[in-house]
Amino acid sequence: MSTDKVLCCECRKEVEYTVESKQMTSQLSDKDYVYTGQEARCNECGSLLWIPDIHDSNLRVLYDVCRNENGLVPLDVVRAIPKKYDIGQRPLSLLLGWDEQTFTRYYDGDVPSRQYSDMLRRIYDEPEYYSELLEANKGSLKSSLAYSKSRQATDRILCLPEGY
Ligand SMILES: [Zn+2]
Image (cartoon, protein in one colour):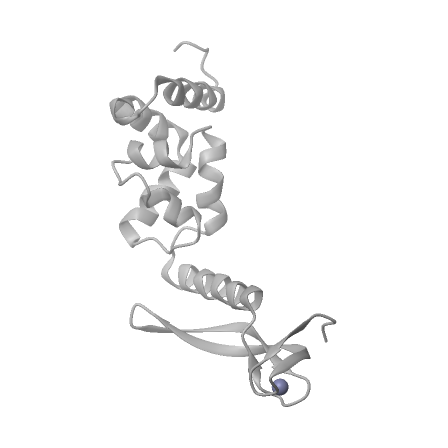
């Protein structure tokens, strides 16, 4: 039970509510996924309540299940890439030859296609591969600072002397 109150459309007032775990089924790309989500019900009339935080957390669980079942790259791996190679989300997207906003969409939780997922996992797992990509596509970056920062971070991982 929560002490917060939210508006119940049936009771037409702010009510206390109870959150319970529940097995849910949702469809993504024409496929059904079963996952354990949460639902909130009004303590007075029992109506389902729409609470943004609960909705968001259900979506995260659903996307994780979808990723697992399809062998797609986990979200925490996607989010670790910019930090690992000290590169911004937009420069990274350009480096991969994608639209400038594409990586950010995946960073924010969108489920990538198989092809994009494999690319992201490989970049994370293989610094050598990222390093090659950085060299080959540095021309697509908008600033040389983005390149040199990422070059340094990548060299540290590869244990090469600076300036290589
Ligand atoms: Zn109610």
